[in-house]
Image (cartoon, rainbow, N blue to C red):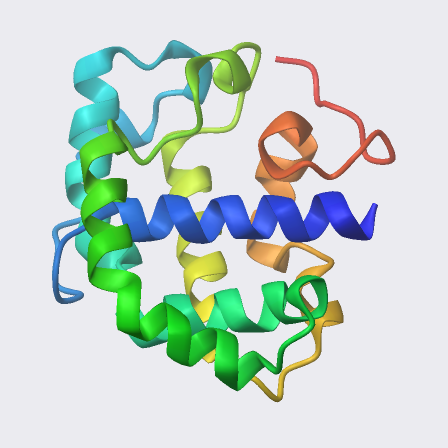
Length: 174
């Protein structure tokens, strides 16, 4: 479970980094889109939501690399700071690759199928996860990533496949 949780968190960071944008003053998601359930999103809705989220979930290069260092250091057998420094020296190339592959900031269509959480609920969760990642340092405990923030409870309950929370909570009926 710990491995899949960390993998889910890593995927979240990659998603956050892929969203692009600068600053934190992006307009909130359009109310017509924010009230839609994730399962009902069209390609235009996904683009609209991602456009409004991009600047608010953008990680700095340092935040993304520090996170990578924290998560990857046990696997590669190097200190977090070393992994972070290596990442910082190559992050621009990796970010360009991510931008080439970033179609949207929403979960993939197959994960949204059957998901009754709204875009607004997902947005609150994603912003909370972003703040959690931004707060990490190489001195942070990896265990702090093992649970989703409380702001993600609605998404976890309605769409456990998105947050990889396992079968304990179950999916809420649509």
